[in-house]
Length: 36
Image (tube, rainbow, N blue to C red; front, side, top):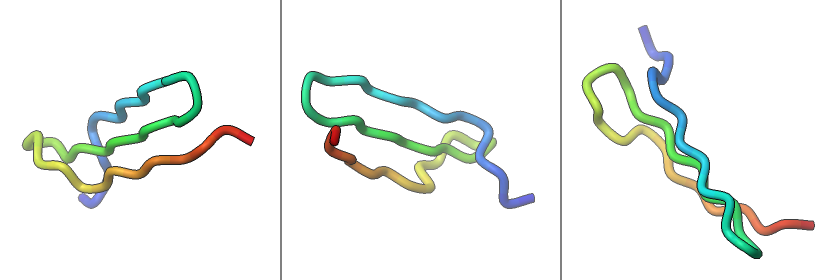
């Protein structure tokens, strides 16, 4: 299966950071998004 098992969201003052990890704890995606 290609579904992430953990989703982490860091809610900083000006930027959101979202990280997706698979069932083995390996990082699959890590993205920064600015607040609009």
